[in-house]
Length: 174
Image 1 (tube, rainbow, N blue to C red):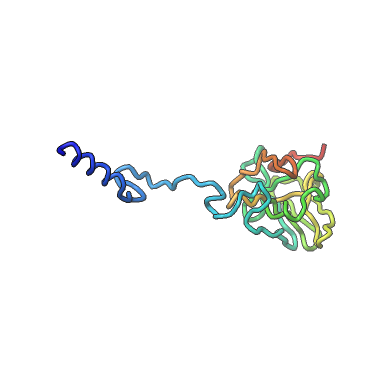
Image 2: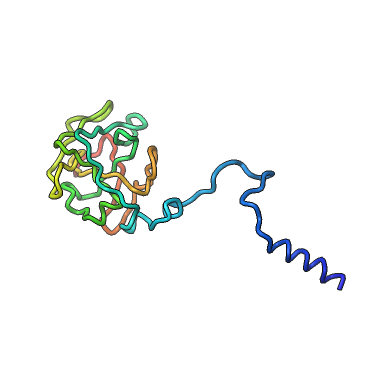
């Protein structure tokens, strides 16, 4: 009986709800979460991401983040991506555009910010209206999985539409 009581006490203690964090060991850093956990929605790579619509601006601006070896962003700081072989944007269908919202210019013009080669910035007509912004001959996109400026989690992603890369200042069509 003496052994059963302490064992029962240990079991009852282990079964009680524990606080979310221990003040003695809490570093204040949030626990890492995946995009699925953060949004409560399926993974953007599978093509069922948070509803992201093509972002259209009269004259979207492409900017350089991180200096000469950096990558291109839009004015909000969102990384810009291209898909290998997707020059006119036709390889990314409506489902793809939920995970990879295209950069669209409503007036057919896009601007190059400091450090961005303006001769590589252009636009091509979209069947859905507006102009798909291109850089170095590739249609460009954002990634719904990035969830904020300064993120490049779409770089190197290979999904059912193709291989994706962050746009760098020297990105040019093969």
